[in-house]
Structure formats: C-alpha cells, structure tokens
Image (cartoon, rainbow, N blue to C red):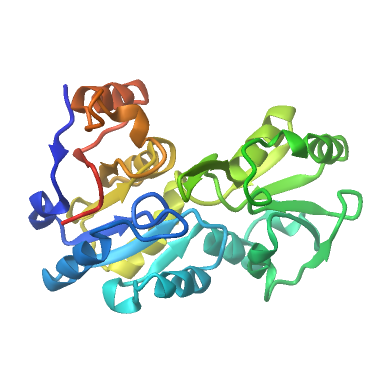
Length: 289
C-alpha cells in the first residue's frame, strides 16, 4: 500500500485541531528556517489551530524558544514548546524514582559548552573526568563530528566503573546546515552496546508527548497530527503516543525516499514504514501550506 504524497499541509489541515511539530529537519536546519515555514505557521494560526513544538534538542524549552525568536518564530505562532532537554532537566530536578535518587550529584557533561544550561538550577556538581563522576549526562558531541568512535576510551572507562548514563537527545544523527552529524543518541547507543546502563529522554518515548497534550488542551488524540522528518524518533514516537503522523522530506530520512527525479516516492515511503511496522497518514516535501 502506498503512502499519499501531499503538496502541502493545507490538504489535511481541516482534519485536525492540534499539531505537534518537530523542529530540526521540519522547521529549520540549525541555521536557517526552511522556505514557506513561517507562512504555514501563520496560516495555521489564522485557521484557529493549536501548535506545539516537540524537539529532541538537549536544551531547556525556554532556551529553544529564544533560538526560535532569532528565526522569526515568536510565541504568537505557537502554543508552547517541549524538548528532550526539558524532560531531562525535570527528571533530574524531581528525582522521582529509585534510579534517579541513586545517581549521585557529581555529573560529567558530555556535550558542547552551549548545552551547559541543562544543569542550571539543579543540585549537581559538574566534574571533568569519568573517575570523578557519579553519572554521565550526554547532550551531544563537539561540533562537526560524524562519528562517536572518539568517545570509545571514555565509554570503556565509564563501563568498567559502572557509571550510569542519561541521554538528553535520542537522535542518532542530524543534518546541520546540509552536513550530516552525529547526536547524543549515537554516543549513548555506543555505550549501551558496550553493556552500559542508559536512560533515554525524548522521542520516541511516548511519555514526552504528555506535556504536549497538556499544552494543546485537546482531549481527543485523533484531533492531533504529529509532523516530523525521522522514522526512528518522530514517526515511531507519534505512533507510540497514539497520534497520526506525517513525514516531511526536508530532514534526516528524506534523501532515501525519493525517486530518480528527487520527488517523494510513495511506494518507497510505504516500504520503509512497513519494514518498521509504522503508520503514516502521508508525506510532504516540506512543511509548507
């Protein structure tokens, strides 16, 4: 069975009252907002639709909002933001279970300096070595890395000493300004394969959608559409949360789903979805009206 290929979201907008939108790969590429995005958001608002951004960014929601402001996407164009970084921060702040309470306070942050905000306001001590750490918090690699292999020495030491790890971004890779780079998920997956213990926060875990439902204030899940660019996180997460899902070509999986002319191939999309036992209501070349 083929998957319908749409020209724009206007073809399905009347079927839903709320939209859960991925950011990276749907709205922007890390540097630039994709053409037609702001127009589409404005038209959704004009149509009275509710919009939530759900991102696997390893940063708190208010920091994500500040970045969106620089792109011209103000709070007038959406009803709220949830991020994997926000989910991670809330978990470490609340320490709601035995696993989190046993973590300790000394934290080795694996990630670029810009992600330090995920530790602000938490009762944690930032350390610089595996030996000094009670646990490891991964937000991502240093910029422009396309392999997690350079982290192997650190990961082996962490595993040998039984360090627990929290992954604040389950994405394995992202396209940043046209360049494919690894994300925190690639490092954490490598640790897990070594036998290390990892907790993941963000899509595709369906629990992160609960905050989206609260922000949308829509009780019927059939009234909500999730839009994303990744089968592994966006589509799988939407399916797990009980939402309809629409795939956008502009992100991580897009190049694998086109014909020789570069157009979305409905049969290829269907084959990929079937292979992963996932359901889509359609696909679109870009998030445009």
